[in-house]
Image 1 (tube, helix red, strand yellow):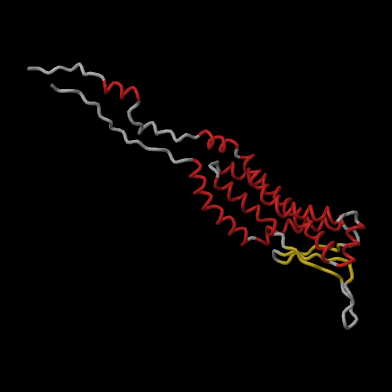
Image 2 (cartoon, rainbow, N blue to C red):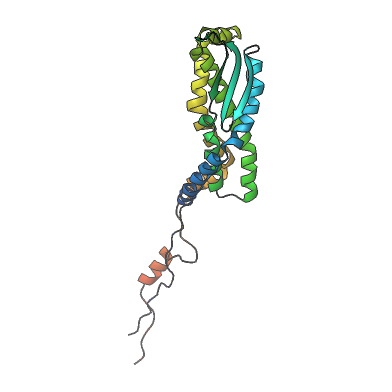
Length: 235
């Protein structure tokens, strides 16, 4: 008696997890973005320096003379006199700030955006919307860094100038820590999450379905295979 035996010709294949694809892409894009961030550090610092040059003299009139950029370092020139040196000279106080301590969030955001499975137009739109916000984050950190240096590390004249402008040491310390510890780390991730809701929903709803072309036998097929065959043999 010849029995009909069903055969499975398809090959079972699992789709690659979108999360795994994103992690692999991020592992390539993040180092590349941080490399470009370091190479073009002077360009990145330029808008931060220009904004600081507008904000600091307005916040501390009569104290801050101006902000000058030297590569990726900002030099803050003040009108505060230094202590008299041994030869009787008196100069004006100046100090430096490194905005890259806060601007690294831009490289992180660019890496996440480039690793996201969106179109080129979508990536450019996200960068155009997110980078100005992150520049403001870096400006926040730079400005409060300058205020902290004036209030805590520039002697009695610096502290008096800051208090005269209406700033309290506790508020400056809080703003400095907020701009150093929280904003650069949280803001780029929050922006990326807001701009990639559809991708995150796909990650949450993904269950690793089988490809239609390579799907194996279904439960119905298995039941049919186990049923008795009506085929009879001929003598």
